[in-house]
Figure 1 (cartoon, rainbow, N blue to C red):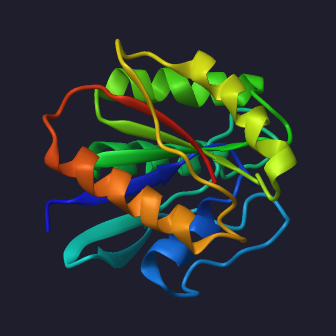
Figure 2 (figure 1 turned 30 degrees about the horizontal axis):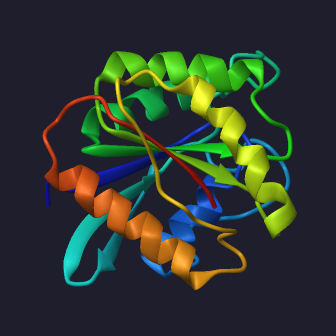
Amino acid sequence: MSNIVAIVGRPNVGKSTLFNRLTESRDAIVKEVSGVTRDRLYGKGEWNGYQFSVIDTGGYATTKEDIFEGEIRKQVQIAIEEATVIVFMVDVMTGIVEMDQTVAQLLRKSKKPVLIAANKVDNTDRVGLSSEFYTLAWARSLTSVPQTAVELAKSSMSSLNTSIKKMSLSEKKTTFHASPL
């Protein structure tokens, strides 16, 4: 299967939760503690007859607080190289932090389609907070895909899956989409 979606971001932004939603499984361990996911985890997703592989990755970090960070970064890089489309997971509650900028630089270099998913938009009051992430844009065109919280709205998964499908089928050029989840 050549349609591969890698979920990338810093620690504790909800990558494993999204992986479980996309694969309709509980294969990824979800904890509030940083560093639980260290290796790449592969699963299968399907949307309206369109099948794709999903890769969950550990949180990309450069703080040197964890002896495994270097290996986790290598695993993230491999997932980026394997991916057709990348979902860059960010946290709307913390806003853009330095590590998000670092991950954005890494993704820019990949020249692959990227969908930025702003997680933890658990109510309509937080939807506006996701607009901050447009500043991470690196493509000429910005397209917004309206979505709400993963935890609350099944329609958000529909919109996300549709975006992934469109980006997988489009030309392989750097694209930026920002979406609150």
